[in-house]
Length: 441
View (cartoon, rainbow, N blue to C red):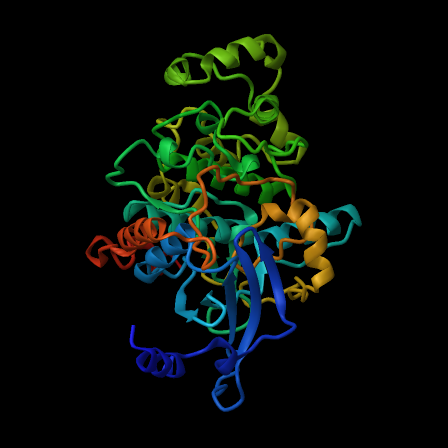
């Protein structure tokens, strides 16, 4: 490349440090980068708007970043995080993603309520807040699924909620780094990514080694989130950490699911015998150990009545057989959302927001995060600090490009992969698939 031309384009290229103030404003540390709260610099800051700046970990563009950028550039829905701009810094080979800033996320909200419950402190929130949160999550996921996108890492930390501003109380599904198109995969998805979803929210078919999984894995994760919103406790909390292996089978996590749901009956899940890990399952588990376990008993302990509409919907979301699990489209039409109070576009319904704003992290917090549970994070704007030890594991070799290690052959392969990842036809993406979104609110 012509050196003068390179200098000229580099001088003209917009730089994050020239446009935004963000130093000392780190609010998140995830598996794949750092997140900063930023504002446009004085001469550009005409509206006081706040942004989230996500700096991708490492140098160059990994396939994960490529995939996230390619998808977010095309996706547009009120309940999916919006990518405003991508900054490429050629001097330090850093990639920055610019998002609208969300002040809250479900992980912090649930944690706040759990603490208040332990201290017997009443929190003034709308009666239908959980319903509004769930409806908007389903609306965002329905849009993704209708456009052949699996999220594959739904958990409370990846569900953002907007604070004060134009979109006050709006849910945003974030962290698309693990999302994937599934309309025409070249090979089984399990061959491409053997282990997906943070394991507390991982569907039983994934734990049993399903090679051809479907959008039902996202629905199971939403059921886990719904239960957590109702009880303030992760429903399938497993104390043992995730195992860094390409084998998705996880004994302790399955044991936790069976302790809540009971052992699946053959008549309820006929295809369980076809699961790759069914032989291991029958060897490790005895059906008789779980005869007294069921979802009704678990939720009754948390004062959720089995004859309530919210419980009936939860049952449909947490159906063990993925082929019988409810879809996002049908879930949005469930009677739970038709009874008063109806879901609201602002989950706070104009009330004061009781949740504290995000705290800024220091380098010391990062050091603790590197040795603790927060490396399981990966949320766009969720602080990874003190998150549950629920790791998502990637076992495919990283494709991050390093200027010191890339051979010409590897560079060629990486460029081809990146080009394929970015060739995402906008014609495949609809604008908003939920006709009920505006009419229902």
